[in-house]
Length: 287
Image (tube, rainbow, N blue to C red; front, side):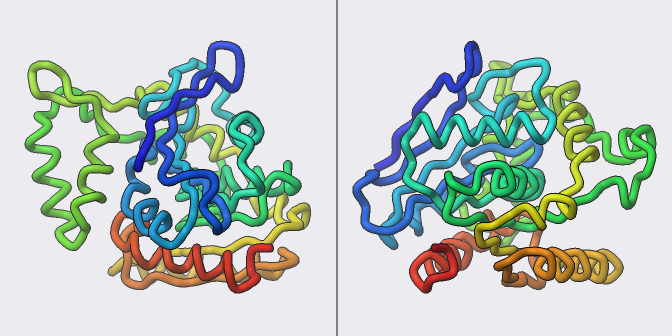
């Protein structure tokens, strides 16, 4: 059973979430956090498998994304991590395992450093070690290089066809989740739920974040799930060094590598991701 819920965690800021199962399920609760320009539904497949394994699961739309409120500010890493603190407290989630993907992975790393008493551990899915300033020392360069394409006005059918063509091995839940990044207008064209202006503010917050400085302040376990895509040899070396460095700095860290895999590996391999989250929660890694 799924429930769509809206929670006002700050005055005027409502966060949408999808809940699977019941809080009384026996295993550790799971909070799932999406990446930049994504939404809670990219976690649908993972959530469905986690419920079958006995977990109560909540996936959240972060501020500016999906069905949540669209404020014009508050996209720095400290604020979005505090959003999760307020959300966990308001829902009375009992020390959930919190998994985040990409930007969301950096957010859960920040959460672990800020509020270890609220979580039993975090999982960073192809993220959590992102330090954009290493590649783009100047914000202006980052802003130019990582500015997203303008998809406004693209026919929804064309976008869906492109997603299916580029991700032919994704299960249907992943395709539906990717399409849910967009609002479909009356004329059949799309509009991203995250506006371009807010997208760039989120990117600026990510560019300003240095997770390596946060690792020594984290006391809870951290599980990394990094992806290496085909043709990414140069990036793979950098990513493996970053993950190794993170594990060295953390009191308890581990990595389960996905290779080859897409950046949205949780949409591509939902059953494996769910199983590994479950295994880590029952074998004593997350305590």
